[in-house]
Amino acid sequence: MSAYIKKIHFKLHESYVNPNRIVTKPPYELTETGWGEFEIVIKIYFHDPNERPVTLYHILKLFQSPVSEGNSPIGRALVSESYEEIVFQEPTQLMQHLLSNVKPVTNGQWAHDTNFEDKKDKTLERIVSAQAKVRNEISELKQKLQLAKETITKFKEEIAKVQNNPSQSVLSAV
Image (spheres, rainbow, N blue to C red):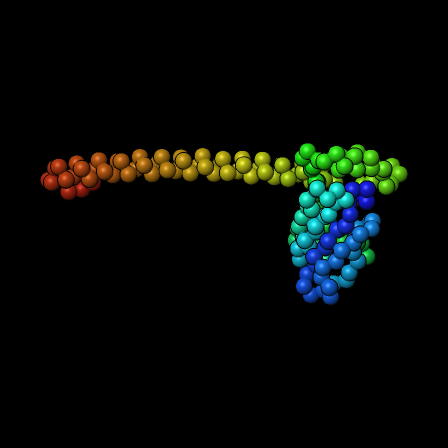
């Protein structure tokens, strides 16, 4: 990344001393201690001055959420990863050269702690399931609405009969 990234500006929570940090060398990371959850604003500047900086927003979680993620074993690191992808639409010649001549930093495949393909599949399954549930609920509500409309029509007919024939004072069973 250092081939095309000039610097990265991190804006931390205001409770940290000097919440604005600029990192100019790989691995482009900060180390701090604390507890909580807050949004970090990350602004990436490129060596090519014609490329505008890219701003990312990352929710930093410094604790395990037992409800959604399960209890983590004691001594195990907390991992809260998210996938971000920067796409350069029509990069300048300099940026194209910098991007296409990047050498890999690691030997072999590097893996995240989070399997993003699996996460994507599970998210899509939940979306499809939710859509099916909504369709079923809509169908049930349409049936109830149709039944209510039919009942209203029958009552209106009965009321009209009673109003047209005052001698009949009792409504017939519907």
